[in-house]
Image 1 (cartoon, one colour):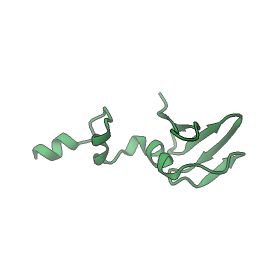
Image 2 (cartoon, helix red, strand yellow):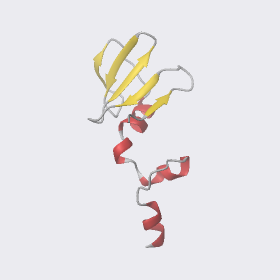
Image 3 (cartoon, rainbow, N blue to C red):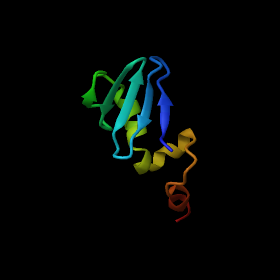
Image 4 (cartoon, helix red, strand yellow):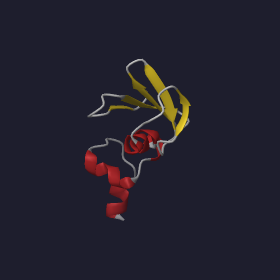
Length: 82
């Protein structure tokens, strides 16, 4: 299942792809970006780099993300206990 977020201001949909890139869809326009928000392909050429980081690094989530309610355990509890 793809990880998706809707941008709170623009309404664009950010979808994580398996290769770590992010597809951004806004209306009929789509674009592909790397996890830094750098344009790769498509007619949509701008994206929020912070959301690209969040969506594009879904499989490599930093431990600090536990604070915002991510449900997967990324070793945070092990770090606290050990």
